[in-house]
Length: 307
Image 1 (cartoon, helix red, strand yellow):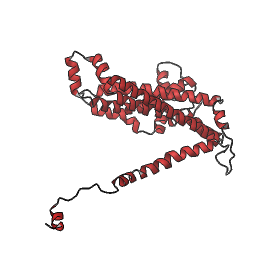
Image 2 (image 1 turned 120 degrees about the horizontal axis):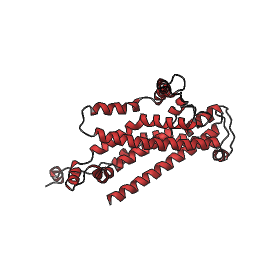
Image 3 (image 1 turned 45 degrees about the vertical axis):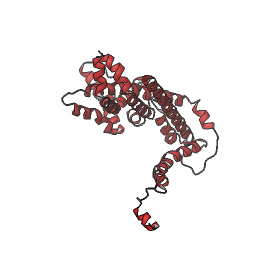
Image 4 (image 1 turned 30 degrees about the horizontal axis):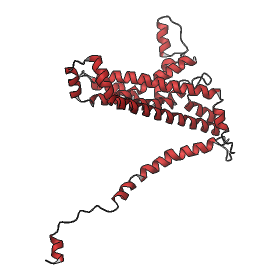
């Protein structure tokens, strides 16, 4: 048989296509470019501005080194804003987890109208925080506020909800929590529906019901949902801006500022872009550190529960 005949009778070769790896890697390029343009470059630019005394408007700037960062740690207004930022982040996260898990467990049951209830609870997430802030401002404002009008009906004196720093901070936490608890509800609802029914049936056969089943079965199975919900809510709370700006504008004075609103006041109000950039870099590092610590803790907790 000739070579030509043997080659015709032989099955076709199925060799690995050339440049497959290269073509797949090229698909990463658009995402990497977007990440570089919208994440890496702004961070580098922010750090470079933080090392100058730029006012945000002039064409010239002078290098001042770490002077702005040293000022951050001695500025009482920044200390107040940083404490408020943790209150907004941690407080909102805790409330959102409790309410979100409560509604998720309730709406995971076979109840009439549960689809409508899910939509109603999630609906505030779709509303702009500015609009939500304006709605609640009409509720909590001193003159002709809905809440004070209700108090007047019962003969009680009106309350300056947004003029007292402590009360205003609590109001901001509550408003932010009520708006975004739908995210937690949706995450936990997905986690609950992903738990195999066989596990629950096996636990019921072993005599585990009610709270004991929830603690021993549901909570360990929801650890990935806990991790996602807590991290998302905490990041959102730590960078809270819109609701504070609409409800109090950071006042009275600087008492209800978060770091995000303080950055805006520093940049536009005090025309200190370099110092504002330093505040932004510190906030960025705080959020990154909190995210890494939370992910580490959840991974460790999940491994312990699985073992």
